[in-house]
Image (tube, rainbow, N blue to C red; front, side, top):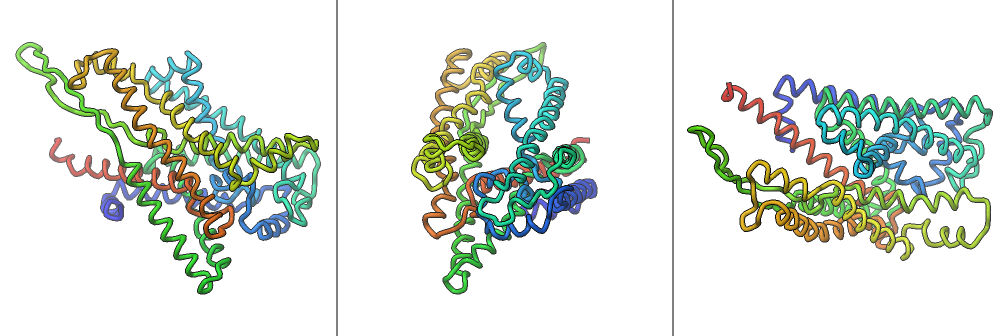
Length: 437
């Protein structure tokens, strides 16, 4: 990885792209520290200190915003509305024929879907911004904080609307910054900003573990967590790179006096074909009942049951549901993102076939069989990785802000590998440029 970056900085145009990407990252990190108007920043800081990393229901969103959510800054919502909008559009593409047709139109259809994603992102930002302001005003953003009710001193409609508009505009700016990185920088912009948001919370979380440690002034706990993190990164890299290569042979065709085809290739089916999406889906789904219970004023039995079983991450019912939802969404997402029938039809159209398997429907059935076989270990791997924070809580008393959580490690490793691959591919293009001419 370091070699790829060193070679990239020696290439003038790639160096410009890398410096541009770093500049956008700096702008993004500055925005995560600018408080929005109408917020008492002193009270916010006092509540953050009293919380001591226990973020409760808002931990997932706070992680994706780089800690900006609990600081109630301009970029408080971060990249989360865009992630949610992208996931919703992906699911709707399977359900709505018009979106499915747009997806098949190529670049023009993709541009239209991207535009719909932007509109939905703004709508979700307005909705989430309103919810965040209402939560801050009610004092529920920091449960147990003595000055939680003083975070928003002026509760007039004008101030509330100004706060929501500011956070919505901040989300639009984050989306624009991500698209700038994609167009003029290196890697996928949204993924890069997500990577930076998660990585930015690591130093403070690690130092908090060191401060709370009791063995050798906390250094033993600190070293243990670092060792666990390195082992996890190695395991995640190994599984993320693992794939089942289905061989494909293309028949030789004679057109005039020239022969075409006759080549061998393969279809790479990753063990973790769904990526981190199932973990985000499961976390978001379990977040909803706890959020409803928090804002409910009734004292009914269902609210007590939710607060007892679905709020704390170390409860057996929560752990079981979380694991089962991850496995379910892994299969669900693979089913909507990979269409064996479409792949089989494309192979048949261009004269391709899997050795020993007839073209057409038998090929689709074989691909579906292989995909189901490798999705099982992939889904179980995702579920076990996502439960690492719970194991850390039980094992060595870490707080809820345990840095090496499954979701954060999966995103950081995935984005890091993809970015390095893009840099290396661009380096290879430039190395072979003279030969191709």
